[in-house]
Amino acid sequence: KSELLKHLKRAENLNLQALSLLPPSCPTDLAVVHNHLAVILEHLGQLDPALGHWREAIRFFEDAEDHLSAAGMKMNVALALRRSQRQRDAFAYAQAAARTYAKLRPCATNEVKRAEELVLSLQEELNSIS
Image (cartoon, rainbow, N blue to C red; front, side, top):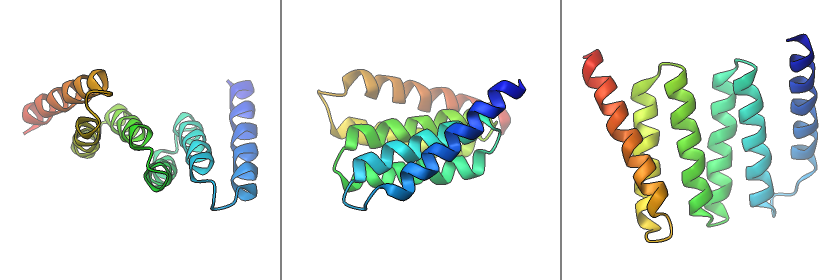
């Protein structure tokens, strides 16, 4: 486990370094690095900082008009929030992903289905909590 932690921390540092080197004119590259940082931080048990990086990834993908990738980031956030038992927040992100994917039909038909299934599943979980 300490070996994994060491690798995750190194990956975090390298991605932070990459982030500092990328110019604002490269939104897709910035989005990818922010996504990497989010995944690393989630694995390190730091969900709130990870969420900040996912939000930045979404923003940069939207700036680059890569709506498919932005929707994918929203799904990542929804799934991470679900794993952390934050169903209400996960539900909001899953709905946002489903809306974005729906605008991309027919190219994103499978993604729409996956997002809608997640929305329904989270709705059931929320109903059982209430």
